[in-house]
Image (cartoon, rainbow, N blue to C red; front, side, top):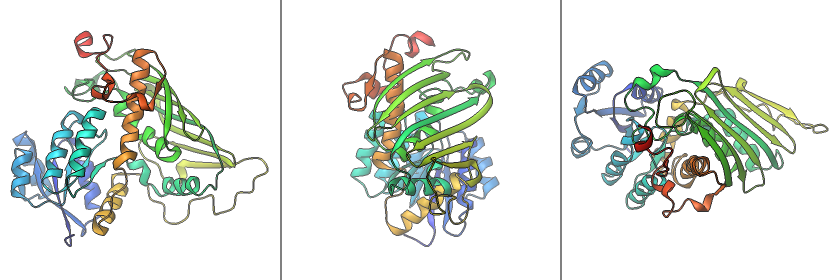
Length: 365
């Protein structure tokens, strides 16, 4: 790799500012050399504000003119898959903001492009990369917490009607889903990252208060290959906002309470009765790194510099989208869904509403 990793941004809307701050947190290791947006005024303002030397109106023009190591896609979800494939085919790695794309079909198209090229397809799932979360993953993988039993994964947020005045929100073809896909996916990813492969899901979803195509609330019961079970709730109708996760293991309970990002103080460990938990279990050792775009960018740069696969790629990232897909499939069909059911023959593999008459856009637009 070069002394500094060269990055091109696709999309210069609000989330691009978060990505740029994350990159600048690693100044000296990476630089944004180009940006692209279809809105010329927004593009010019963004590049001037952040001293980005080259700007383009199309992804194709940017990839043809620049030798990029990493393409950072900051567009709405419906515009993730095609730029990601183009970037991989141009020889770059690609980072996309969550969710990775609109369907398992799109994910697999991107994965095929990754297989035929040297770059990696990375999704922003920043909760994996806080220091406390990394320590919990180590404890689980090394068996120091014992068997996993019960988990709670709740994303209770609030988004009013004004939030959905942005044209691409609340639509299947542009946002991809409601709070399950666009908000709770952060916690859902951490749940799967820590507990591993899921096997079955039973869910319900409702459109209770927002005039949108998608759901505004969902509930699910998830079974894991380890035998653990989890309760998953996603809402954008909750005035007292909270992101809460709880993991009950044989040797103790870990709880995580925060909103949009955690630090070490956001976690609490309670040993099981009769268990003496030494410092090798809790608290997490070393410097406290908050879960954030900057923390994930550190992992990405480390991996690219070493020529290794970054975290939040491949089957682990697909597992998260599978769980979201399974939740919608179960909720909309009223059936229990197994992970292996989500094959190309399943309509939910292609579209998260599965063409269900009560949820497909033609019925709810």
